[in-house]
Image (tube, rainbow over all chains, first blue to last red; front, side):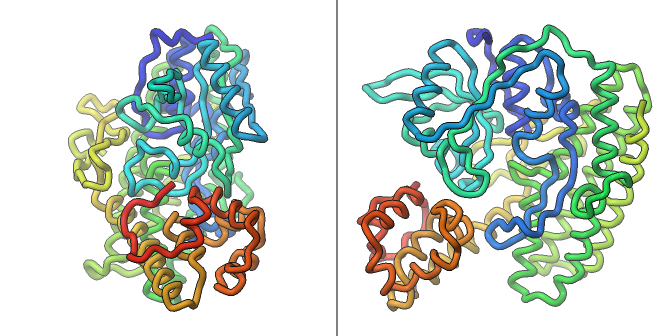
Length: 337
Length: 141
């Protein structure tokens, strides 16, 4: 059982890693968000042309939703995460209330669109936002939930109806009221075996040993090819597509460059834990590719707005260059012992 | 990215909220830093919002002329598209598109209308009605 009287809200760069780190913190294990991300091998790239968001293909810079939590529960010995979904809203809310009454810290999968505390313009139908509920109270006969949303700088409160709507939103990745909590937590984590394993996995999943053409470095090259082909599309689609790349890369939920920096933070922490200085070099290299990703986003934005004399070919080649840089890193990481 | 290079381009769309990014501190260590926003990102977000509002405006105009049902306008106003709505309704996309025909929409059963209303977070009356003036601004979840 977590000690919620000691629970401290901490703003994180990403919702799922932030939620996981929050759960660990509440259970007395001090794991940073970056460490969670690295141990779960969260870093990747995927281009999914068959999954459309408002008519545009999905590009992801990390493992699919829930994968980080699942990975942690598979990898860390003694960690048990209970996931639960519900057929109807009443059951879902009753169960949440019961767990909160028992003093549990509960993670929920929600749709951003229904969360009233989100800035209006950021409320899109994205169904895999993670947040932690740490309390419930009744004010003037209305049930209010205290929420530690990892991507906010402060804790928030939400009425029961909104939270329920957010938890039972329909559509792609529908949460079905999914909630999760830690059932048992180990006293310590065996970093010496886990870190190398996680690093190798990330290297293999993204580098030359990855056989799927749409993920890892191959996915980046596919997108580069697609950017070149934009020449043939209408001007409107071209603008939307390039803007979409920027959004997929920088917004909450996917955060491309951000994940490179976060992974670098993990590598630095790992270098210290394992006393392996070469990890620091890789961290620096990831910071460098993170910078390039940002540069790439700016380039896409400029082309989309018609500023400067940049060509689509330039953007495609830029992306290929990033892919090549990351490939070298991943191939080294795949051999890390 | 160095910590003092973290962009701080505040914009109204964030309503004063900040985000966290990882950046390199003076000691060469990565640490979290707070950011108010980045211009490239803000522009992309605004474009996406504009695009869907533009579509909603067009749908409103067509609904006004009787070329489509209020359903299409409400769908776009709630920031949904046909694949998302189809998935939420458990229908095929062609079925949703068929309901855009005013004639078909006007004969939908109460049960179907209720299902639409629930999925979109509207009341049945609101769903059936096209607003007199074009609402720009907050979608009503």
